Image (cartoon, rainbow, N blue to C red; front, side, top):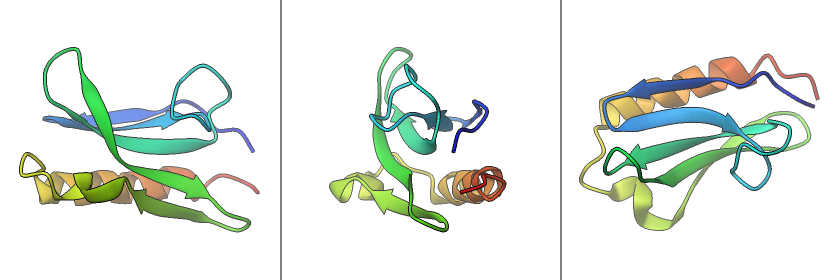
Length: 90
Protein backbone atom coordinates (compact mmCIF):
# COMPACT_ATOMS: atom_id res chain seq x y z
CA UNK A 1 0.00 0.00 0.00
CA UNK A 2 1.59 3.25 -1.17
CA UNK A 3 -0.08 6.57 -1.85
CA UNK A 4 0.82 9.68 -3.74
CA UNK A 5 2.17 12.50 -1.64
CA UNK A 6 -0.42 15.08 -0.69
CA UNK A 7 -0.79 18.06 1.61
CA UNK A 8 -3.28 20.79 2.37
CA UNK A 9 -2.81 23.71 4.72
CA UNK A 10 -5.42 25.94 6.35
CA UNK A 11 -3.88 28.73 8.44
CA UNK A 12 -1.74 27.02 11.11
CA UNK A 13 -3.01 23.46 10.45
CA UNK A 14 -1.77 21.12 7.74
CA UNK A 15 -2.51 17.58 6.68
CA UNK A 16 0.22 15.78 4.78
CA UNK A 17 1.08 12.28 3.71
CA UNK A 18 4.01 10.64 5.47
CA UNK A 19 5.66 7.31 6.17
CA UNK A 20 5.42 4.95 9.14
CA UNK A 21 7.70 7.17 11.22
CA UNK A 22 5.65 10.33 10.44
CA UNK A 23 8.42 11.56 8.17
CA UNK A 24 8.69 12.00 4.41
CA UNK A 25 11.77 9.85 3.82
CA UNK A 26 10.20 6.52 2.85
CA UNK A 27 7.07 5.46 1.03
CA UNK A 28 3.98 7.39 2.02
CA UNK A 29 1.47 5.01 3.61
CA UNK A 30 -0.34 7.23 6.13
CA UNK A 31 -1.02 10.90 6.90
CA UNK A 32 -0.65 13.31 9.79
CA UNK A 33 -2.20 16.60 10.87
CA UNK A 34 0.30 19.09 12.22
CA UNK A 35 -0.01 22.41 14.03
CA UNK A 36 2.47 25.07 12.90
CA UNK A 37 3.52 27.33 15.74
CA UNK A 38 5.94 29.41 13.64
CA UNK A 39 7.24 29.39 10.06
CA UNK A 40 9.82 26.67 10.72
CA UNK A 41 8.35 24.44 13.42
CA UNK A 42 5.31 22.24 13.80
CA UNK A 43 4.20 19.20 15.75
CA UNK A 44 1.84 16.32 15.05
CA UNK A 45 -1.54 16.56 16.74
CA UNK A 46 -3.17 13.53 15.07
CA UNK A 47 -2.36 10.89 12.48
CA UNK A 48 -4.18 8.38 10.31
CA UNK A 49 -3.03 4.83 11.07
CA UNK A 50 -3.86 2.03 8.63
CA UNK A 51 -5.58 -1.11 9.86
CA UNK A 52 -6.47 -4.17 7.81
CA UNK A 53 -9.44 -2.52 6.08
CA UNK A 54 -9.40 1.24 6.72
CA UNK A 55 -7.62 4.13 8.44
CA UNK A 56 -8.14 5.23 12.05
CA UNK A 57 -7.57 8.80 13.22
CA UNK A 58 -5.33 8.74 16.32
CA UNK A 59 -4.86 11.75 18.59
CA UNK A 60 -1.36 12.36 19.94
CA UNK A 61 -2.00 12.71 23.66
CA UNK A 62 -3.85 15.90 24.64
CA UNK A 63 -2.43 17.91 21.72
CA UNK A 64 -5.78 17.83 19.96
CA UNK A 65 -7.05 20.07 22.78
CA UNK A 66 -4.49 22.85 22.19
CA UNK A 67 -6.13 26.26 22.30
CA UNK A 68 -4.47 27.28 19.00
CA UNK A 69 -6.55 24.77 17.03
CA UNK A 70 -9.46 26.05 14.99
CA UNK A 71 -11.77 23.04 15.08
CA UNK A 72 -13.66 23.96 11.91
CA UNK A 73 -10.35 23.87 10.03
CA UNK A 74 -9.36 20.67 11.83
CA UNK A 75 -12.58 18.90 10.80
CA UNK A 76 -12.16 20.09 7.21
CA UNK A 77 -8.66 18.56 7.13
CA UNK A 78 -9.90 15.32 8.74
CA UNK A 79 -12.58 14.99 6.03
CA UNK A 80 -10.01 15.78 3.32
CA UNK A 81 -7.69 13.13 4.77
CA UNK A 82 -10.33 10.42 4.84
CA UNK A 83 -11.30 11.31 1.25
CA UNK A 84 -7.69 10.90 0.09
CA UNK A 85 -7.09 7.76 2.14
CA UNK A 86 -10.35 6.06 1.13
CA UNK A 87 -8.83 5.62 -2.35
CA UNK A 88 -5.97 3.48 -1.00
CA UNK A 89 -6.16 -0.23 -1.82
CA UNK A 90 -5.22 -2.57 1.02
